[in-house]
Length: 394
Image (cartoon, rainbow, N blue to C red):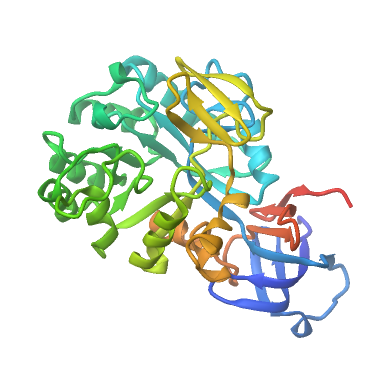
């Protein structure tokens, strides 16, 4: 019989994230959390592996549901990526991320289908760091006028037949798909995606008030990177951004790299949305965790310098700031409490995508947790499904 592994992780405080627990500890057995609380409640039993961290805090493992790549791996170009998905998984694990959604963009139909099939196969094996738990398809049914860094020739009108092909190629792993609500057959697409367990997400769009509300009424209750890929707020013309801010049915993503959104707009979103309707995302490209330089991402050349990621036409193309650094902007810009900001990268994405076994430090949840140094916020330890996938050198 396999011997069970029991570990006790101790830090100056825990962010569960619902509560802050001073001088806290988390007891795990194999891949499950057994108990969470103040250290005084735990006995130092024999055979217990103890990991004690001073001047450090602990959170649930971060969940990044919108990330295009990292460590040299591009989710939209599996066959030609300079590095495998393992490198992405590993570097995310080094930053406290334990779950992620590899995110693809629009591509020629045959290429998109082949890439989805290969990506799904790569996700089916155990990875060395963070776990790839679902695919995020950012397109191809978006508005070319708000395509961002995506290639115009790959953007398509809504085609339910092709949507079915995409879902089949993804082998059931597509969890969310971005679409523009103003396109013909948008409500039919929303209903189709919901029937197949895919969350329809509004974005890359110039939808007006009526078009947005029709999509929401049909069941679209999620918004792809609010403020980015849509017209700005206007005092007389309501569109996707203003409706997503004020409709309580909609959960919104925010790119929390400190560059894509002005600090006051982050503050506005945090004031408008309930604390459980904010999901922090990185929107990272394959250059995350890589040196400054030029990178070929699909057909585009991307220039990366000091966290900025831009096309040759100076259009923002994702970022290289991962969640471990980005989530603090929700405190500094959005004036959220530490626990509220942590929810945006742990329990909120878990709830939005029914990842009911993670995102919280609670008994019977997966043993997914991360420990960070207080002054620097650098990751010291990451545990994914009970496995220690990263531990900083002493």
